[in-house]
Length: 98
Image (tube, rainbow, N blue to C red; front, side, top):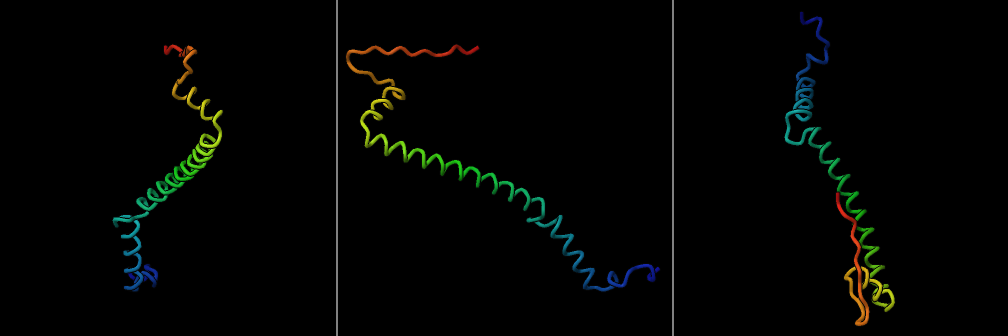
């Protein structure tokens, strides 16, 4: 019976290494599945980071434009906050929701 078992499996160090690898792969707190989930979450967070950095750049450009150009400031106030001059009327049209 012992003759059918390969020599490297008879070695106590090889058995210990195999058990250690199996333990780390499946039973440990930081097993491969957990590591995969962490990498997936990290990828998602990096995408969010890139998105928010782009939004910050756009906002800085818009802020610079608003602080330097009074025409842009007036346009922004009219569109976003529905501000008007004294002799004007504003009509807001909204689409009906079904």
